[in-house]
Length: 326
Image (tube, rainbow, N blue to C red; front, side, top):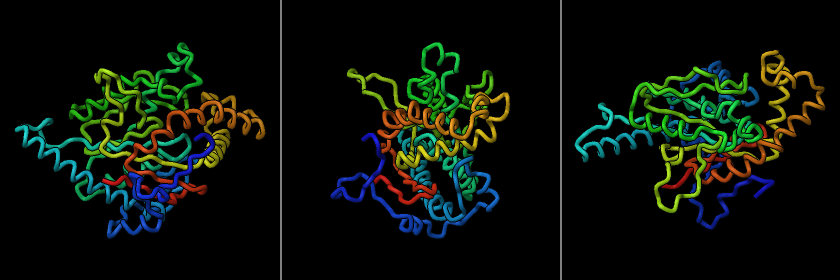
């Protein structure tokens, strides 16, 4: 419903596919999972306008890391069972990359969550190889978006090179090596030509992006291409009310105006010359013209497809966790 993203999964008369935990209830599920990150490492993981504390990692992300360790082990066991049934291994070592999707609005803190998960999962005792890619790299180049009249739709589903993203995920799941993902620059606000990120047979791959849980209308003949989320073994949606998201977006815009935008080479350098009032008006205009419609039309409707929903409060702290029932 436009105007709100509030979620009450408790008052559902038992019909919700989720079990919802308060912050304190979720924190208890950490059990004896050790804290592998130092305070200085945690500080480096937080985003420009996000807040990440030691307590947040201990109470929210360590229980999630423990849950994912159990899920990955169970999935690998199932993969080995299927390989045994088929009398072959698909990639030679009886191991299949486990893919985690992280979705949510602009400014909600997807990048921080993805980086924290990567850091925690990579510290498991068996030191797995954990890679992280964002779907920004799969955006169509600005030249294409301008030609197609899509610059005002950047970040909407139609602004991505979906076939390229699906080929990338297909190659990852098939165990091909190495696989390359296009590189995106937020400084230049464009895909960087002839630059890429190499992903070489990770144990776990985290895919972060606005629309990674997006679906389309199934074709009537049943022959359509798969959705990005079809490749995910687990997915996380980061949620917050629209008013909070708007505030965070404007706040981040104002901080960038004082930092990255001041570089003459920045795509958004022109905004650094605005007065405070004009800058806030510009940020609100961008939010209401582009990001809010994308949230309401494309991002928020995918929330209920996630395996886990992290519900944020106004101070960026996660107040509630909803886990899909098995």
